[in-house]
Amino acid sequence: MRCLAITRKLSRCKNSARHLFCRKHVRWPYYFITSIVTAVGAYLAVFQGVVIPIFRSLNTSCIVKPIVTAHVEKDRLVSPSIFEGKEEMDWKKFKPDFITINRNNQILKSFEFFSSGKSNALADYPLTAFLSVGQIPTIVYATEIDMNGDGINEIILELSHREYGFHDDKMRAMLIYDSNGQLVCSAPSPPVIPELHISEVCPYSAYDKIGVLKENISSVNIPVHFVNYINIISDKENILELGWVIDNGCYACNHIFQIERYKYSNDQLKRIPNSTKYFNSKYWDVDNNPEWGYYVHDINLVKKLLIEYEIPPFKDLID
Image 1 (tube, helix red, strand yellow):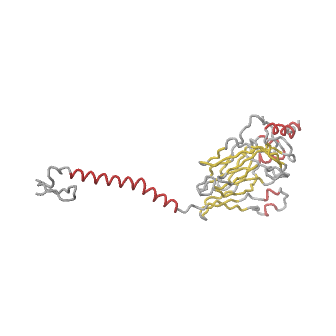
Image 2: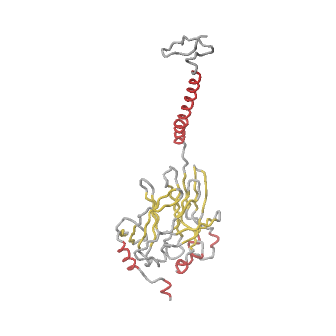
Image 3: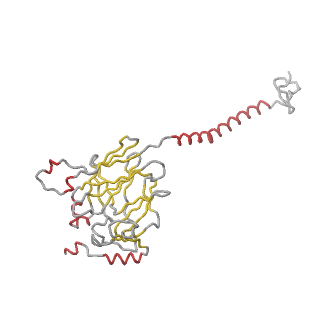
C-alpha cells in the first residue's frame, strides 16, 4: 500500500506502507491530532478572552438605564375641620411634604417626614425647645443627580422644618437615596478643627446637633446630623458642599460657616482632604455675591471673628 503522506513538494509520498503511513511519516497522525487540539484551544481562548467581552460590552452599552425621578407635593393642609374653634400655630395646619421616588415612571417609595431634635442645646434654648419635644412637619427639596458617574440618578433630599417659632431655625437634614429607593447615607458630623477650639455655638447652629426623622408611612426613625448649608457643585464630577455655623453670635449677626466638600462613592460620603473653607455671612447662607459676605482664608482671622461675634450662652444670661 502506498503511503498517504504529503511531501514538501505537495506530492504524495512514493514509499510503500504496511498501514496508512510509511516509516518516515509514521508520526503524522500524532502531529495532526496535536494541531487540531492546539487550533481548537487557541480558538476558544480568543473567543472567551476577546470576542465574548466585546459582545458583552456592546450589550451593556445598549441596555437602557433606568430613569429615576422624585416628586414632592408641597403645602398639604390638615383637614380644616380639626381646627374649627381653635387658634393653632400655623405649622400645625400643615402635613409634611409628600415625596415619591419613581423609577421608569413606576413608584418605588413614598415618604413623609416629621423631625425632632435630640441635642441638649436645642432643649436649653426657648425658641428651639419645641423641636426637642415635638414632631415638626418637614419641608422637602429634592434633587435628581448622578453623584457617582454610573449614569443613573441618586435622589438627594434636603429637609427643613416648618416655622414653629418666630422664624426659620436654619437647621437642615440631608438624605441620599439610590436608584432602588433605598436610603444609603445622610449628612456626616462636621470634622473638628483643633485650632479653633469650638465649644459654644449659636442656638441655631447645626454644629454637632443631632435629630431624628420619623418616616410617617413606615414608622421608621432615621437619626441625622443637622447642617446649616447644602450645595451641589456640578462640574466634571459632582461634589457635595456642607456647612455648619461655628460662632456663638445672635440670630441677626454675621455668622462664620465652616464648609467641607464631600465626594459620593460606594454609597458613602467621603470628605475631600484639605477642602475646609470659611465664609463670613450676613444672611445665614453662603453665596459668592459680595453683598452676602466673603470667604476668610486666614485661620487667625477666623479666630478673631469668632471672638468678635461671641455672646454669652443663653443659660448664662438666665443665671
